[in-house]
Length: 99
Image (cartoon, rainbow, N blue to C red):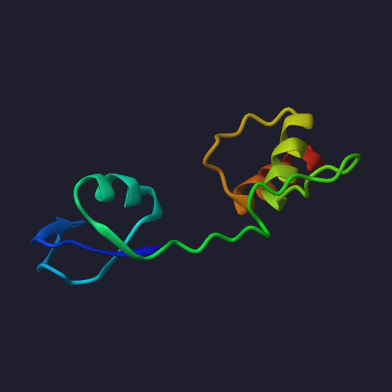
């Protein structure tokens, strides 16, 4: 998040800020607020270590437990909904494997 201030009273995210008062804004809103007359005091911190991290050649990204369970459910022919969590998928897979 970045810190900005305005020379006039401004309303942001449901709060009203008096002139020359610093407040935090979302990184996505910085450009629009600059166009509206705001000044940046503190730029957003960018984490370059994890930004656009791509897997090395020959390696696949690690799959989450939920992704693994969904693949297993598809292999077993289980008709599941996209909002099912780990617990419900485990139960459905156990039920299908017993049958």
